[in-house]
Length: 155
Image (tube, rainbow, N blue to C red):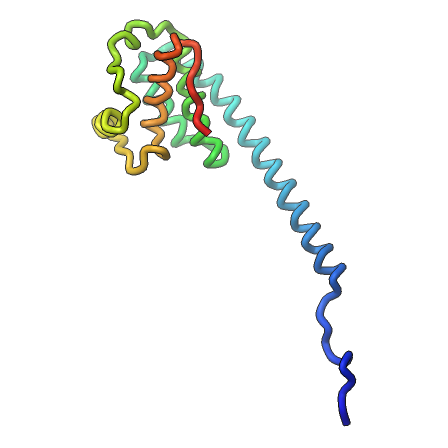
């Protein structure tokens, strides 16, 4: 006896598969939105703390605070890395840093200068683009070059 061609297990229906994909996609989207919102809240609250720190410390203290801020960052990794210049700015802007900006080396944003200074601080960078110390020093350079008005944020 021969089996008919349409007999046997056919698998789940297409509507069931697509329905499951839609449910998973919506759940992941809701989770991602919630995580981003919580990360954003944490960053905003921590910037207030950086401002308080900036009123009490010198420029090197702001660099230290920015490096520590990154190590304590409770937001998602990308947001933490991208917000280092912003955190550094919130610290630096609390005092006039003109004296420090005048004596800073104009080549401070170069890789060699950054590697040397980060190594001296005990915060050696393996990859300069992913280094909190280098990002904080680049923010300081940008802060000084802009007349203490802003920092350049890299995305």
